[in-house]
Length: 173
Image 1 (tube, rainbow, N blue to C red):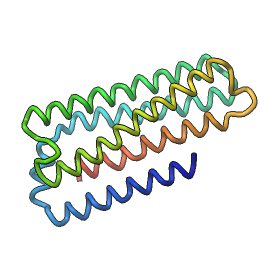
Image 2: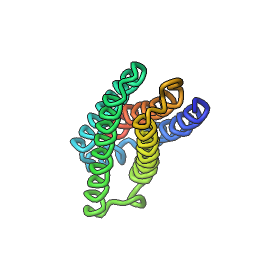
Image 3: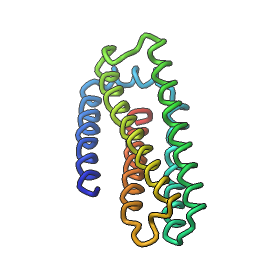
Image 4: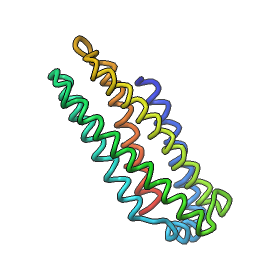
């Protein structure tokens, strides 16, 4: 899992560097394009993912103490907040499409849609992983070894970390 996380972080680092360099070459275009984004949606998504990661951390602590019921509750709450992220992001995409903005509008929006859609897919994969460890936790499968649980939680925290970098890079700075 650590190799996979490192590989994913490397891919996103390339995206982030490419975005930052392209922004320096097209400052006016990026400033005007960022003004068309919905920063409240970005903030809601940031809060949803940070809080989701908090619940996953609480779930990890609970499973280490063999508190299965608490673990499952925390993981479900984490997944519900991830679902909030997905719904808000889809609303935001719809908002942009309704305004006539898509991946071909300009360089900013090409990069915006590529990076955020790639992250969106990672959120979906993270939710699948969280669902899997939730089901295993319900079956009390982590009595002896919680390393699989830790790996799933680590992936989820990586997804959150990426958004914490992506949000200010794309929406604020």
